Length: 200
Image (cartoon, rainbow, N blue to C red; front, side, top):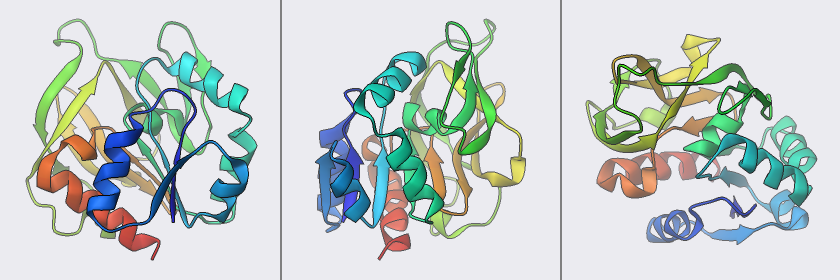
């Protein structure tokens, strides 16, 4: 069972529907016990970084997420959920993230149209099973901030938006997708299927 974490700032139902369509057992939950029982975790997120972290703190789930990750359970952060996996965000101030991955979240500069919204091609970074059967395909982004990772080898796919934007990242059991796989047609479904296959 995959636990989709409900902490008040997620695009939950569309992720749930996509997983059900792929025949993966999933539940939307804010219950620590259910998250602990799950075989994998999805951390969705829309909105502002600080608000999302505040909601996570209020939900009391931060230690639960970190302890599950430490035990090796796969976690997938989607959109803002991916950004929360990193150390620091500079969205309207300087805020601490979960610190599961090394890097910082910064704003696109003013020479670019912000937010970055629409379909962008995924460009191969490192080889990884999460990227299996994905080749020069397009996915749907909506974001004004992007990750500058410390370790570029953790980037499975990049996107080009005037700067190199990490599209899919992975470090062992910690994964992130900056775009919305649940809104990215067949390619997004393939990526969610690849995540689901990791935890079977």
